[in-house]
Length: 339
Image (cartoon, rainbow, N blue to C red; front, top):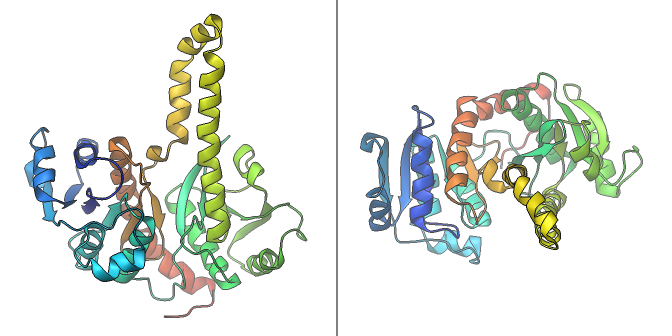
C-alpha cells in the first residue's frame, strides 16, 4: 500500500518527520512511502537511516502552505504546495491515502479539491478516536464543518456507525449526540433538530444525548456526533485540560523532597498517561467520505506521531471504510445531494 506523507509542513523539522515515517516500515511490511517535500532535506534525513530503498520514493517541492496562511489563498496561489502534491498522488491513484501535519484548513481543502467526495456525501466529517474509562470511542465532526444541517448530522451518524464497526471493531455501535444535558428536551434550536433527525434513522443504534463529561468517564456511547464547531471546542478543551493536569502535577511534585521521590517512582505511570492523551498516540484525525484516504495531523506532530499516523492510515484504508460508507449511505435512505 502506497501512502503519501507531507514531511515539509508542520512545526517539526523534516529530519524528525522522515525518521518517524521510516520507523513505520519496520512495523508493517505492506506499507510503502512517498515522502513529499524538499528533496535535499529528505535525502539528508534518509542518509542517516537504515531502510529498504525500494519502499521509499520522494516527490520534490519547494512550496509549503504555512500554518498561519489563509488556506484558500494558499491553495489558489501555491499549486505545487506539499499538501496539494500529496493529495494529488491519491487522486492520480499513485497512493491510497495522504497525510499532512500542516495547516488544517489547507489539508481539508486539498482533500476536497484533489481527492473529492464520494457520490452522495454532503459534507465529509473529521473523525478522531478518543480515550475513555473503558477503552476508546470516536467523535465527529472535529472541526471540518462548523455549520451543520440535520441532514449533515444524519450522514455523520451513518458514517460514524461504519467507522466504529470496521475500525473500532464494535458490532452494534451506540451513537450519541453531544449536548448540554441527557434529556431529550435539552439543547438549543439546532441541537433539538439534530436530535429529531437522528431519532428517525432506523439502522442507527441512537442512544440519545450525551454530555461531554459522561462521554469520557462512562460507557454511554461508542460514537459521539456534533457539529464541527462544538466538536472542535471539545477536542481543544481536552488537549488543554490534559496539558494543565500535567503541569499541575509537576508543580505539586516539586514542592517537597518526599513528593519528588514519589514522583520519580510514578514516572512510568505519568509517561503512560501522557502518551495516551497525546495527539501523537493516534497520529491523525481522518476525513471520512472521500474517494481516498485523507489524514490530518496536529501541527506539533513529531516523529512518533508520524509513525503512528502511517500505521493508522494503513488500518483505516485496509478496512475499506470509505467504500462501505458509500453503500451504507445509500441503504440507509439518508437524503443525498451531489454538489
